[in-house]
Amino acid sequence: MSATAVQFLQRWVVTTLAVLVAVNIVRGLSYDGVSSLLVASLLLGFLNAFVRPLLLVISLPLLLYTLGLFMLVINALLLWMVGSMVKGFHVSGFGPAFWGALVISIVSLVANAFLGKGPKVQLKKGRGRKGDGGSNGDGPVIDV
Image (cartoon, rainbow, N blue to C red; front, side, top):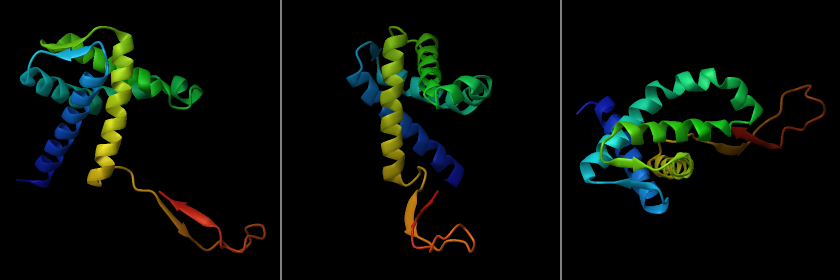
């Protein structure tokens, strides 16, 4: 199996797990069967890959003004859209979509960090540059 296929399947499993957790935690999200859950998570993954970047560009002023918190609204709208497109996956309104998107984001972040696929942040001691205003170069450096 190619590395791209493995990466795709891994993302789909993480998204499915996150949606399953959200359905069990958030009142107002439900699914009728496993197949509708799998289709909903697959569609959510495609919307996140293709529609979400366009929505991020369009809403850039709001994202900047809210320091990125508007991204939760975008995620909620995408989840709500999945609920209207997939028969057997139900999102009863914007409130459950918002809380579901928040749960999905947190679970995905934790799962991807556990699998080593999330953003890598290291804290290490580094040397300062010469002439940087008297720094001796012994302070912490955050390497992202």
